[in-house]
Length: 581
Image (cartoon, rainbow, N blue to C red; front, side, top):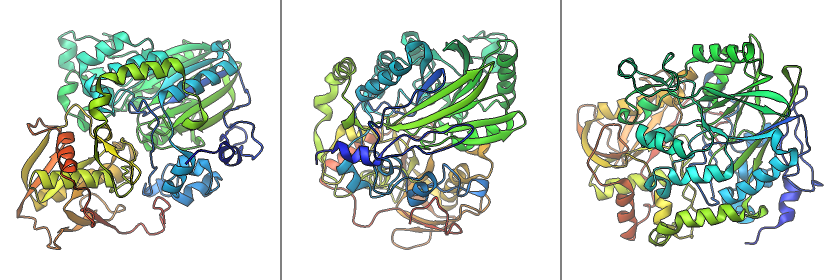
C-alpha cells in the first residue's frame, strides 16, 4: 500500500519538553514533522539500541511491559491505549504506530517501515545543519554493533564504518563487549569518535599484570567522559556502559574487566567536571536501562539529562527526577533505528536554563536515503545478500519479539529447538532485539539471523529436574520484577516452550512461579528429570548454531503449531497499565 504523506502531516508531530513547562506540540497544520523550531545554543542528537539494522524495519512495540511497586503505571511501564492517553497521542495516528502496538498490522500497511541508516543520516544531517555544526553533536547509547547476521560475521566492523559516516562523536557499549577485548579494541582503533565508559575497571589481577587501561592509576579501562564545546559552552558527556556484562554474557569475553553501576565513582566524576573543569552541562550517555536510570537520577546529583538505552523503551517525554542537588531529566530513545532523539539546551552562565526534547520516529518513506550511506550499506551487504535472501518460509501470523513473557519469534525458536533436538521443553533467552515480520511476507535467512545472531549461538540439550526448571524461571523473573531497579538487568522473561506456568510478578523471589505443566497438561514434578533444549548459554556449548536449527525447521515446511507452545497465566496484576487490553 502506498504511503500517503498527508497521513503523517495530519497525525504526527514532535513531542517537545521544557524544564519550565512540559508540553506536547501536535498540530494538523505542521509543515513537516521534522521541522523543529530552533531553541537554545546546543543540540545533542541521540540514537541507541539500533542493533545494526542497516535497512528500514518493522518493529512492534510491546503489549506487555509490567511495572512493579513504585514503577507500576509509570513510564516506561505503559503500553497500548494507556501509553497513548499518558502522552496525548491519537490512536489512529502515525505516532501511535511508532510508539505502541495498537492496530500494528493495519498501521504497518499505512505508514510503512521505520529506521534505516541511510534515512537516519538524511535526518541527522538536516537537524545538524539547522543549528550549525558548532552547535550540534551526535551520540550513540550502545548496542550499535550487534543484531544482524552481517554484524555478527564482520564482528561489528561494518557498523564502525557506518558510525563513522553517520558522524557519531561518542558512544558507550553493551553487546559490543561480546566480541571480546581484542576485537573491541581493534574496532575502536577504526572508530573516529570516543568510546566512553566510566564504570568499567580492571580486575585486581589484570591491574597487577599491567593490562591495558585508559587510566592505570584508577584502573579505568576506557575514557570516562568527553567535553565538547557547543555554541561557546562546555558540555560534558559521561559514558555509562551496561553494568552487568560478565553476568548477562559469558565472562570469557571480558575476563580482565569488572563492571557495575559505580554510583560513587560517577558522583566523584560529575563533581570534578562541575568543579575543576567548570562545564556548563553534564549529560550521562547511559546503557543502564530506564528503571535503573530513574533510580540513579534520584541519588547522583549534578547530572542535567540522562540519555538512556538498553531496555528499548521509546518514551516521548523526559521524566523529571528530583534529587538533593536539583532535578535530572531521564530519557530513553527506543530501538532498531526507529527513533532519533533531539535534545536542545539553552546554556547560560554555567548552567542549563531550559531544555527542549523531541523523540522523532524515523519514517523511512518520508526521508530520502542519503546516497553515500546507501552506497556504503550496499557495499557491505553485497557479499551476503544473495545467500541470505533465500525465502525459507512464509509466516501465517505476525512474528514479533518484544513482550515481557512471550512472542511469536521466540515461540518459533522454541518449537524449532524442541522439534529438531527432540526435547520436551525448550528455553530461549528474552532478548529484546530482532525485527518484526508481517504475515504473508517471505521470511529469509537474513530475517532468522536478525533474531539469533550472537557470538555464542550454540544450542544444547541437557537434563534438568522440575525444581531446576522452576529455579531458572524464578531467577529470570526476579531480574525482571525485582522492586529494586539496581537488581534488574533488563531484557524480558526467558521463553519456555513445551510448558505453561502461572506468574505472580508482585510476589517475592521463590514465590512468583507456580503451576508448571507440560503441554499435555501433566504437572511438572520437582524431582523428575526432563530433556531441555536451549541456546545462548553463558557456559560454553558444542551444538549447532541456533540459526541453523531454526532454518532447518522452517525449510521442512513447518511454521508454528496452531496452539503456541508457551502459556503464561498472570496473577495479581489486574488493571496494570503495562498490560494492553
